[in-house]
Image 1 (cartoon, rainbow, N blue to C red):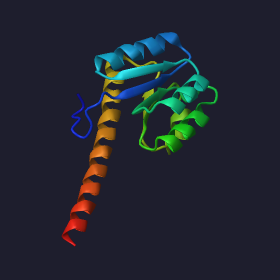
Image 2: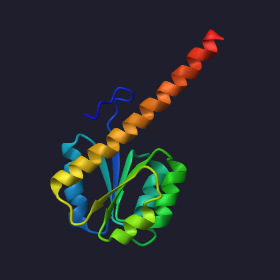
Image 3: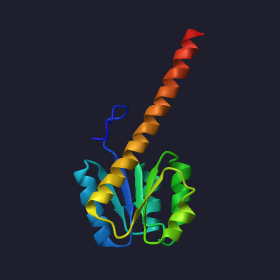
Image 4: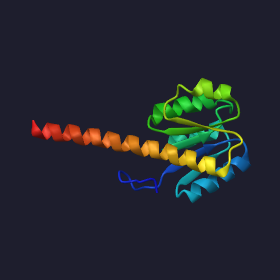
Length: 146
């Protein structure tokens, strides 16, 4: 769906939010995009899930209690993980702006904006994977030629 030539498996998205309505809304969007989702109600639940499984994308509200620790843990364990932060305040965007691999979407968000943001994040991840594969192949090719 996102031009996957490097990997053909379905993309996996972890959604962390205390609001069940938001989690279900996002699960429906993710399903429409042909991805798999796992929904977590709390940061602690998300942390346990991340110990057992890998994800391509994290969607969360950075204002959740303990969320900063979750994000730091994610980036250490999965450095290529993409994140979408659902934010209500521009201050949060300014504080988290230094994080790489991150996109922001203001709350309340609409269906189309969220779909586009997820697609962009997944495209970014795919491009990063393709660039890494290109660099690996280039190193391998030059090693053979030398």
